[in-house]
Image (cartoon, rainbow, N blue to C red; front, side, top):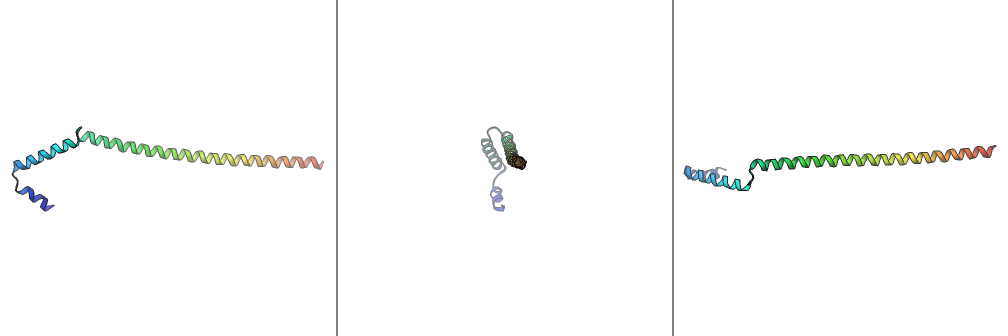
Amino acid sequence: MQEERRKYDNMTDSQKIDLLLENQERLCDAFPYGPEHHRREHTEAEEARLENAKLIKDLKHSILKTCVLVVLSSLAGLLLIGANTQVSIFLRGIHVIQ
């Protein structure tokens, strides 16, 4: 760092100003619409990324809820079928006993 500063010690003030202006022109070329526009683009990209992450999280939750409901509905259906079968077996047995 110290060596980097020493190369400017031998320069006159006008040379330093010229160097600063050149660097400023390079920066302006790097950001043709200005640094504020560039910053706004980064902010919008970050907001979009966060919204996408939230959307993916919500989709995962809805898929999980749907899967749980399918499993519970299937179990309830199987329980009803089993109960119906047991009741019909019981009712047939009553008819045989008479």
